[in-house]
Amino acid sequence: MRTFFNWSTNLLNYLRSLAILSLLCLILSWSLPAQAATRISPKLEQQVIQIIREHPEVLIESVQAYQQQQQQQIRQSQQAFLQDLQVNPQSVIGNSPVTGSPNSKIVLVEFSDFECPYCAEANKTLKQFMEKHQDEVTLVYKHFPLIQIHNQAVPAAKAAWAAFQQGKFWEYSDALFSHQKELNEALYLDTATNLKLDLDKFKSDRALADNAIVKDMQLAQKLGLTGTPFFVMNGVTFSGAVQLSDMEKVLARATQ
Image (cartoon, rainbow, N blue to C red):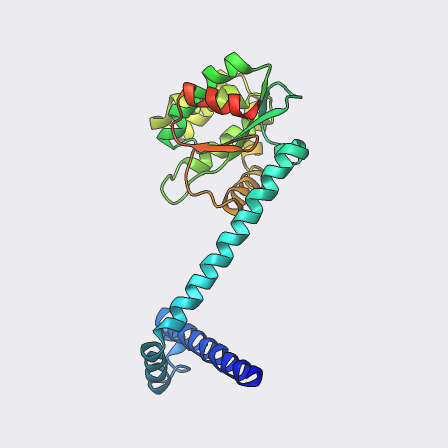
């Protein structure tokens, strides 16, 4: 029985692998027709289609297994992130902009996008919250520009990072959120001028911002985030244009 079971399992795995490999070949032939035309024969294409028709469950099972694996990796990343936030918050904070109490046990991490309207609303709430709890909470900003839908999110993030290099991140970010519908090169330079930044340094620093922004984006993707704003306060997560009363409740839970 054990031998037959092993043989059956191996055969099923072989069929799965064959179906997946065949599907990949077919996808390549469809996506690269000019290059693949001389390599993928019509006969092989028909064989692949036949395999898919006869064993559609193999593809479905493979996709489901892949999705489960991805979800497990995300859960593990989230657990590690929350643990680091509790045990070694500085490893999470890194070189990100910080305001509030520098040594607080309550760390509030924000993933945000300067072109996201919900982030602009949340920023108003955050300002009220931090004015009230600046001696209790450390606020950390992480860049998560949604590049698929916001074409000014990355340029704005670069400008804010450059302002951060001159100690003006929070003032600059407030200006970006306040003029969110006007995000463009003129606004970035005018804001830098109004804040009395060194413009030559500001311009050169923008060109150096990619690594820091990409690092934040990779962290957000690793945690499975799909939208902004997203917040983590100690072990509690919440998102959207949150209200002040909601943040107060989360703070109360975090301090228990």
